[in-house]
Image (tube, rainbow, N blue to C red; front, side):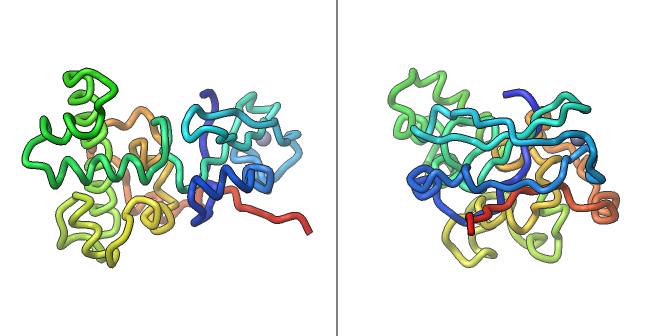
Length: 213
Ligand SMILES: [Zn+2]
């Protein structure tokens, strides 16, 4: 998956996204590298994700930067297979299980246990790392809670955590670790997401759904 990802801001579920082929209505009004225009930025088809089946992602191309941009809807995980809700359920199961071994045995029966444990370890590190970074970025909301899904769920009045959180911290997503954020190289929380600096800068570009009139 070459290029960069931006957020396709929508509360829709992956089921609706696929059934209604919502990538067709994804609209990105400006090139991320040349917001002033004039670079020939244009739609560049779609690419397909393995899971959920039938998922296509809208893509654009900047001929001057020679890079593509794709619009990831809030329901999908970045650089991980599947939906954000699926991954959230796995991490939550680990938080609630008596041991990681028990959680891995339940959740990933299609792969060998050592592989399942490694996958869960990496996933939990990435998600908890993102939550810890968010807590540092939004201390007014999250300072008092643990950087876990259970901790954040208490503040976000129940339900799912990661999808509503994408809206809340949209401007930081390019710097937060995947699968929640969009930076595949930031695997561990290191405190380098600087709140002040990025509060001062412009918001990162985001695609929206625009129904045809
Ligand atoms: Zn451009």
